[in-house]
Length: 276
Image 1 (tube, rainbow, N blue to C red):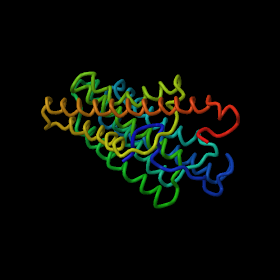
Image 2 (tube, rainbow, N blue to C red; image 1 turned 90 degrees about the horizontal axis):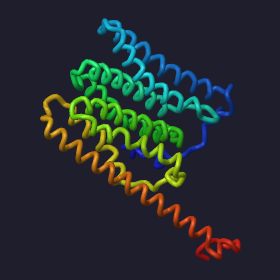
Image 3 (cartoon, rainbow, N blue to C red; image 1 turned 180 degrees about the horizontal axis):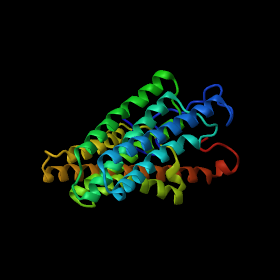
Image 4 (cartoon, one colour; image 1 turned 135 degrees about the vertical axis):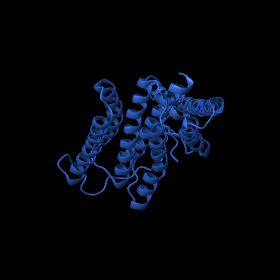
């Protein structure tokens, strides 16, 4: 399972495959086709579903926009690559992003109706959660692991957690949104504190805590789960997530301080490597 941390990709960086030489290359064309197919598939699927189920265009359009924000962000991640390319693993992740987008649309419909999380939200969320194990294996099996793919994967994970947090907010109140917003708060903080952009070493604890977030949300959203039990599970998940992010922030700040200390040491100022 990915670790849901922007500075800790789950796929190792790899050089682009041959043919990825510029905007007119075959690889760039495939990337455009993959991104466009993902967006188009979502729009067509929700347009058909909405026309078949909804008579009021307002909730349908709001739901369409929520899902579009998810899938357009995923497609944009592919389109912004330089050189532009996509891999088999990216196609799996884009497909998973499409499921998350549909889940987001369903969540908005439930929130507007005031009916709480629906069974389709749980089913779609579970499908996206289980598929999370597929794209990484495809990347390793095909030898196409890339840092760009890792970022796309992490963003899709974060989108799923945010969507499920919004669904949980309709059942438990606003506080579960802290689970879904913490990743984006970390990204926002990194704009002001550049040390938070540094990579982190892989951590089993971080992976387990990251995987526990969507699992806890899906469990709490099950209709048969008592609200008190669901709230207890979500509270535990939120606490663990805050601990994980807090621990990583401390690590990154210590790393920044150690680098600054090494850069300011007499040996370093004299042109010799620190510690020699």
